[in-house]
Structures are given as C-alpha cells and as structure tokens.
Image (cartoon, rainbow, N blue to C red; front, top):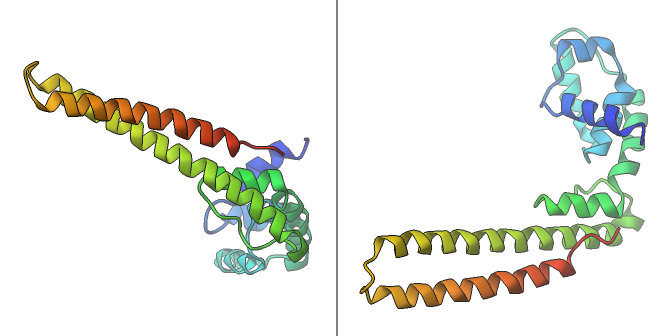
Length: 173
C-alpha cells in the first residue's frame, strides 16, 4: 500500500512521451521503470527515455530501469488490474508472462464487457433525453408523440436489462 502514492505520482510524471531534464538528471531509473511497468509499457519503451534524455546529454541506466519495470509489471499483471484496465475500455498490454495470459485476458475481457455495456446504457439514456426534448417541442395533439413515448418506454426497459447484464461483469477480484 505504501507504494501506491509514490507509484501514482511517478506514473503521472512518466505519463508524458518524454521525460523532463529534471527527471533525466535525477536518475531515479528504477522508480521510472517501476512506473512504466505498472502502466504496462513494453520493454522497448526505454528508447523513449533514451531519446528524451539524450537532448540533455544524459544516458538512462537501462539495467536499473529494467529492474524497476519488472517490479512494476508484477502490479500490472494481476487479474484485478487487468479487469480495471478493461473497465476503462482498454485492452491489456501484451507484457505479462505467457503462463498468466489466459487468466489476465479473461479478466480484461470482463472489464471490457462491463465498459461496453456502460456505453450502451449511456447511449440509451442520451436517446431518452433527446426524446424528452422532442416531446417538449411537440404539441399535445401530435401523432408523433405516441411513437416517441413508446420508444422511451422501450429504452427504459433496455436500460434495466443492460444494468442486469452489467452486474454479471462486475469485478470479482
């Protein structure tokens, strides 16, 4: 738990495509690797740091970065994290051990399903808002009102169905 706050801060700092001069000069390569690993960065990502730091005449400590990245991958390559990544609509980066791949992909797919159903719910809610706007514009005698009200009722039922489906994909980790 103690690593969570510094790791989040490092992930934020390393979130840019390149490191700042200060990051390069500080030389906390193990920490930078830890953050990169926890974000699922490929081993080739070190080249981004090499490029960024070469502008300042600094060469990264690749071995320290790799050691940190390996530690970070242990946090990234868990079923709970694979699920979380999926809930953001993102596929898991192919950086985890082959023997863990099936379980992690299954967790990621559950998260992706949860995310997709949420998008469908949001779309249905937006359509209901659009229908409400249209109904407010129509006269009481309009023949279009009946079909809009019927569509609105159908969408409400669809949302209930989707919410029930989404519960099936909730996190279990």
